[in-house]
Amino acid sequence: MRFVLRSTLVCCLLLGWGAPSFADEADEVPTVHGLALYDEPALPADFSHFPYVDPDAPKGGSMTQAAVGSSFDSTNPFIIRGTPAIGVGEIYDTLLVQNLDEPFSAYGLLAEGIRLDPDRYWIEFDLRPEARFHDGEPVTAEDVVYSFHLLRDEGNPFYRGYYADVESVEALDRHTVRFEFSSNHSRELPLIVGQLPILPKHYWEERDFSSPTLARHPGSGPYRIGEVDPGRRIVYERVEDYWGQELPVNVGRHNIDHLIYDYYRDRDIAWEAFKAGVMDYRTDARAATWAIGYDFPAYREGLVKRITVPDGQPSRMQAFVFNLRRDKFQDLRVREALNLTFDFPWLNANLFYDTYRRTESYFQNSDMAAEGLPSDAELELLEPFRDELPQRVFDEPLPIAHPQNLRERLRLAYDLLIEAGYEVRDGTLVDAESGRPLTVEVMLYDSGMERVVQPMLRNMSRLGIHGSLRIVDINQYLNRVRGFDFDIIVGQFPQSNSPGNEQREYWTSEFANSPQSRNLMGLEDPAVDDLVERLIRADSREELNTVARALDRVLRWSFITIPQYHSGETRIAVWDKFGYPQPFPKYGLDLAAWWVDAEREAEINQRLRRR
Image (tube, rainbow, N blue to C red; front, side):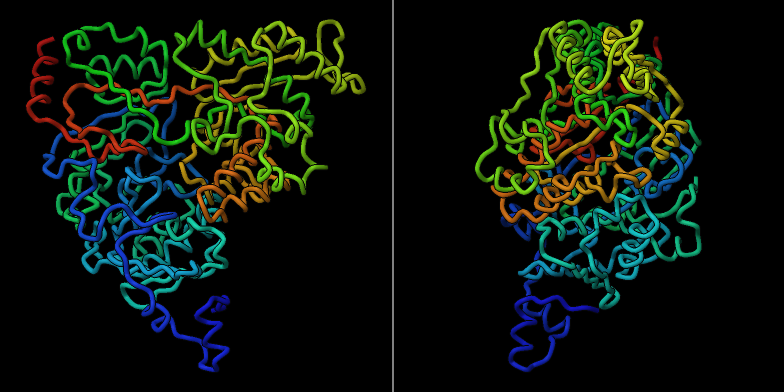
């Protein structure tokens, strides 16, 4: 193993003592119960439970949700092939688990002790000897080593980027594992490796991990796979003798006996199923339904209620994504012109009951969102790429000052297209040199977005652009995206308050042509690559904010997407049989802290039977 030059090693070599052993080195580092990104964890070593749970929450009952517009053919969520079932992550434990009342702090789950090199070149985890997989086999350091290599080498390309700075992983003994890092540039990397899902080596080493499977394979988590009805339903059942149920990070959590996901190809049918009591929990992403759709008997009788949970994280960027691998989208002016055809004010007034706000930043509703002109610190980061970046990155303020009036927007879009070398012939916008018309196809797998796409296509047609919409089934959709066979699709880019290694897969050249990576647009930009690495290496909150703002500027002025909208909250509708502590966690919604109220559930079931 290659040793990196850190302070302990340098001192030893200079004094002629030789390189220290792992044991000597680790002995100098205190063993702790949790980690925080920048400061110390908020919870002490003897904390009894997370602050947002009820430690006396009852066990039992079920929660049924809908998976809309999709099906599944695999219970392996870690690979490219197949369509994985929703919720499979419930069966796996990780080394650490996050406290959602802190921006990014994590506490021991499989790991009972943590030793982090003060210079952040390595981390060691002491596994809990009592940890067990569902088949009774113990969880060991070898399972951790095996899981890391399996996911990085054979799993989704995401893992390759996420763990790129991990140089080696070694089992020091049966219950101690050590991760060595190639550099200490990524401050969040120690917490990231703590998120590693641990798979059983004894189960997977004799199986083909890269192939889809519908097997009920074992994990070590609070739930196991119960019922598998391919493409229709999957049920996870609570493990009654779960090894970790008394740990502080689990007390008051994982209370519901059965987590059920029923699959529906149409969201309207799923909505009717909810109103009929077939489902009892839904996230309501449709503004019209939320505004006027709840005038039905169960809601009027108080059996159904609505809950709004403020977003504690930056609002997710949902956008129409251009496939930059296609020549027609290479010209920034074309992409900006197509942005102008998205008439958000009309959509918000006519379809969304004025409940949404336009998303402008990739770090919306956070201190990382760029505003106004770049600061001196941002300019210092951007200056080396002045010749490659749009000039507006440097000298025009954000947000982008596009006209709000549709006629003015389309006039500006037309001017941009003419400037980009297009002209109108017989009502069709064509390339002036080749005579080839500009055509655009938006591909979806869910008809729910059709009403958003069609007005945009109508506006494109007013410019002479031939636009079309294609709705395909989920498997065809995934295959086409993996093969980069699309013009425009809808993509989502969720952000946390502490963005880091996952940004590589979102934006960097390394992942531009990796099937199933989240760099959906195929972006290859040296400035973006550099800023992403600087973001990962940020050593303070101030530095992270500065780099994120610079990255935000480059992405926004590059017009790689057509940003859509956000609400700033999560809207939930439930049949009123659940209990949950309040207030909700500051930085996310933890459904694992919910429980079923047996009396309310019995009352609801009785009233449903009477109908």
